Every structure is written in C-alpha cells, then in structure tokens.
Image 1: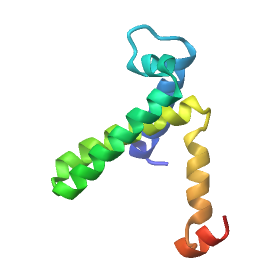
Image 2: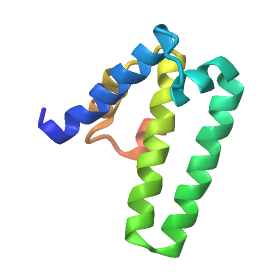
Image 3: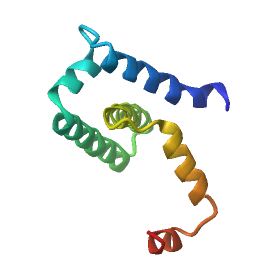
Image 4: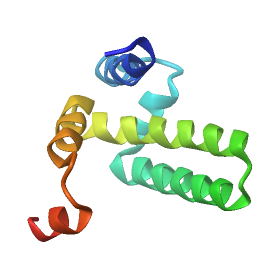
Amino acid sequence: MREKEKVILRLYSVIKDRIQNNAENSYVNSLHKAGINKISEKLGEEAVETIIAILAKQKQDIVHESADLLFMLLIALAEKDIDPNEIFDELIRREGVSGIKEKENR
C-alpha cells in the first residue's frame, strides 16, 4: 500500500483512539458522546455539501468536501467498529463484477 493510501488507516486509528480514550477537546469524541444519530446527521450534511460542490463543478471545493465526507464516514465506521479494511475487502470482492450483477446477488 502506498503512503497516500495509508492515510485512511492512520486517520481511522486516531479516531478510534480518541473515542476509546475519551479524549478531551476532541471533535471526534464530542460526536461519539452525542451518539450515532448525530454522527449520521453530520455524515448526511457532508454528503449533501459534497453533492453541491460536484454540481457547482469547483474542483477544489469538491476535494475539500470529499475529505470532510470521508472523515465523517470514518467516524461513523469507528462508531460501529467497522475497520476500513473490511470496506477495502468488499471493494476488492466487487472488482470486475458488473454493478447490475452485484446488486442482483445481494
């Protein structure tokens, strides 16, 4: 795995650490304390902001909002104790499979 790709795993590790160690003054821990509904709300907000950026076609805004979206997704995954490697494995499993065929197999 290349260095840039490892950032997802490093960030996930930091998120898990902040949750498990009840880190003070941590945005991640404040969301954890607020619960999965608040985390889901923030994830939805970031998804909408990403869509708006995509529709506006401003590349830097798309990059910025996509980073925010990935960060919130990692917080949600950490809250549900789902390691990013599980997502990577699922993507690998789907690689080369038609999207239509994959949906039929669910």
